[in-house]
Image (cartoon, rainbow, N blue to C red; front, top):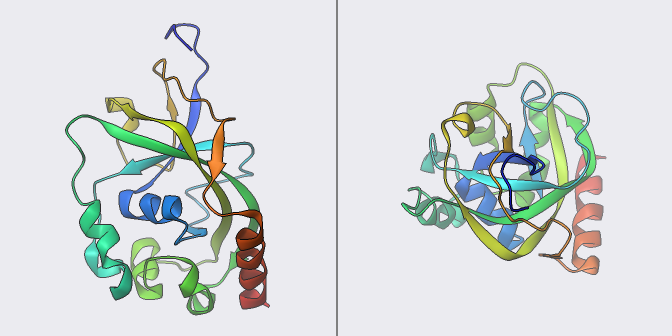
Length: 185
């Protein structure tokens, strides 16, 4: 993609930078989302776009606080896009189910409840994350800001979503998938 007027927009999911880093490290396997943030079906591979605002260290499990500290300020050079993901499974859970899933994400169950203030059910997305062969620094545009989950990277960003390496091998990912299913039964 070399021409901004002919480049295809790349879908990107905005998530707190600490959570994006945990996904890239393979520490976190799921995203917990409020249903109104991601309405409908999420199809295809998308870029993980780290957001640096509204991060709260008190939402992290104590053993994962380093993810907050490593990610609490946006780099001056741009927003680092280092991974792509796709949704492998999706679950609808109650707020009470967050306890059984706590080992699969870096926030505390109460931190997630505080973030989403759930009166309704929540969506749990099992993600298969892959690290980009060539990470990119993206200039933040005004159109990327704001409280919304999805953005389209509009600039001519050379991101080859097809040539990325899974952060977890197939066996480890299968084990995580089975553990998440078991936690929700």
